[in-house]
Picture 1 (cartoon, rainbow, N blue to C red):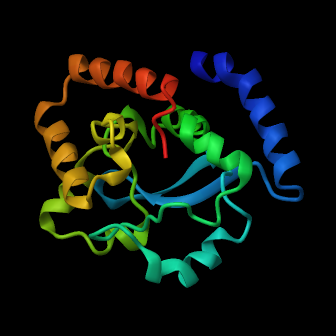
Picture 2 (cartoon, rainbow, N blue to C red):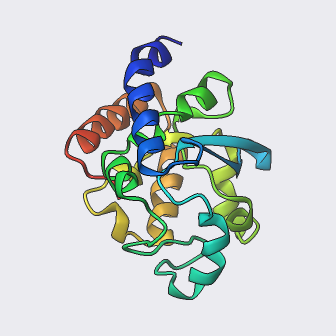
Length: 186
């Protein structure tokens, strides 16, 4: 709760800037994600893409640069001008504090998958779903996180599942602060 209060003014400013950058679009983006044990929940983020990004994804599937069940392309044309800053600074993730408060996510854990991605998981990848998803994780604080393969993501997430502890969470959270300050995001 304290985190929401602490970040409320910056969040209001970000919302205003999103509205100015994308008039008529909601500043908050809500999307179904897969949580612990495969339970669906609505995850919140600041909008960093154009309002019809979900429909445009179908047209862009052929340009997917990731292996495995994940979709990602460099210089994604759906990302707005201010959205690039939000992603680079990782500020687009702040509304997930609400998901943490609601108990759907934790601060640290594997990032929540989209349902169509999780449906393609093999047994090994499904282990990611055995705990609450997190706002940050091992692979998100890696120096070249955007060039990591899905297999690399999975290895980091399985490492977290093996090592999970209060001290590991603190280490990842401190590394996340460093990554955010260095603008190590997308």
